[in-house]
Amino acid sequence: MRNKLITMQEAIAKYTWDGMTYAHGGALPVGSDSIAFGREMVRQGRKNLNLISNCNTQQSNLLAAVGAVDRIEVGFSGLEVYGFANGLRRAVESGKTIIEDYSNGAMPLRLLGGAMNWPFVPATICIGNDQQWCCADRPDEYPSKTKIPEITDPFTGKKYGAFSVLKPDVAAIHVTMADIYGNAIMLGTEWSRYELSRAAKKVVLQADFIVDTDCMRQYPNLVRIPGEIVDAVVYAPMGVWPACSVGVYDSDEEHMFEMNNAFKTPEGTEAYVKKYVLGYNSREEYLAMIGKEKIEKLCNNPTTHLMDPYRKWIKSEAEIKELEGR
Amino acid sequence: MDYTKQEYMAIATGRELRDGELAIFGVGLSMLAGYFAQKNHAPNLRAFTEGGVFGSTPVGGLPWGIECNRISANATSFTNAIDALGCLVASGRCDVGIIGAAQIDKFGNVNTTGIWEQPPWQAGKYVLPKVRLNGSGGANEIAVGCKRYLIMAAHEKKRFVEKVDYISSPGYINGGNDREKYNFPGGGPSAIITTLGILRPDPVTKEFYLDSYFAYSSIEEIKENTGWDLKISPNVSVVPEPTEEELRNLREVDTTGSLRKK
Image (cartoon, each protein chain N blue to C red):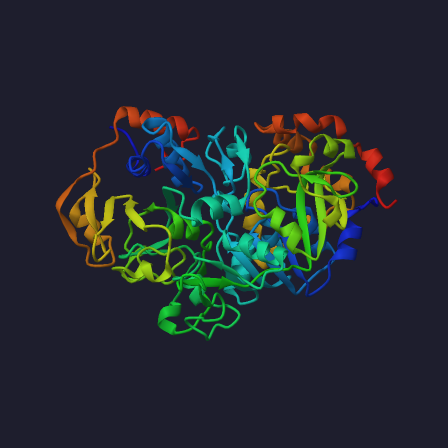
């Protein structure tokens, strides 16, 4: 297999474009999303995105806050205990972003359907309620008969819901560690990253660590995303910040609130982008922006033992620089 | 005794969980109620989160999310959403779940999606909400699939309405046997635990009535704070106050004291 390691700037230039159907995550609001990838999309001015988000995260919150999202399909649009997502909320309430609601279980099922190339997925979730009856794409149709149409089970004659399947153009997936070929290990809940990696037409990994392939040969059962289905790998230390990466760093409570508060207004968003999105030009500058002391504090957390088996295979910044773009 | 309304509510919710059950909790209050039960009277409660985090208890305070480090530090298994929400919850296998509500109606339907000036069912179309909320998350799977589930909500008139603006997670829909139309594997909400008392569904009409109230509240206060003509059980009683042992167990779970802020 070929070396797929490229820089974040190259990844966004090559794998994203205006108007694309872009999936991220497939994370939960507080952890494991490819947030640095989203920052770079804003830096390169991507717009008119059709977003596939199992859950909202600070990435979709940011993209919506800057007005880059025309439409989003989502199972959960908040930030869990961190509150409502102000950027996404403002975009939805102003009519800038169309939000099509599903549930947290429906999104992975629809990705699984896309991965399997099924015509639709039958289920009993999201029916008999407004996820089925309200269709943001066709708002005049109430109760909607086309968003989650009723279907008859050919075996029992019972009625269920039929879900459309998802096949994003590109998925940017956060993983804890990857080798240069795209073999990847995720720590913590996988959420819907397995299905997403199979449903998307192109897959870009954003990894906290680049490790030697010997690591994958030692734990092949844990490699749930094999390099065979991956197009590019980006090394992004602290790339989920201010959310958490299980086994590596905690969520940054202070910045989670600061970021979300900024998104309440266009002015706050502009100031945030200037400082925390346009405020760096390299990995080193990105890490300096977060701050050494803060990083040390976030990396000192009760999950670090989860990384212990893998540490000997971690590649250094110098080794990674050497491998990028070769 | 010194306790907050939130603590009374969490303990009353925890008492509804039984030892040995397979249970799913969301973040926040419901997770505290659930882990309180495990510590207090249900040591064999088998709990997991919708992300597929198994065998863990919160470390270092209330988790910020169902996937965060505080709930991942001592897990015995990490799987995924299809497994947790699909194989274990939507399938009908899970005994009990706990969800929250921004708005709730007399048939136990829950809205967590938005507040409308004119709700879609009234407008006959899907108009923009006045206030966008969080959407259903995994609560829809819990509402559809769990054998029974509990709803926790602050008891205020604006939240307890005749008919919710938007059903994010179905209770008994229009009442009676309405759930049967959709072949849901789960049985529906068995109780609404509020900051003032406990409501339960009528076995036939499925309309929620007042079953019991907290020691500091009253039937009058609860009726005043409910947006429909709330029926009162002929056997209405006072929910036993938290015992010292219960409070101690709850506070061991709620290490950062999130429920003690008044």
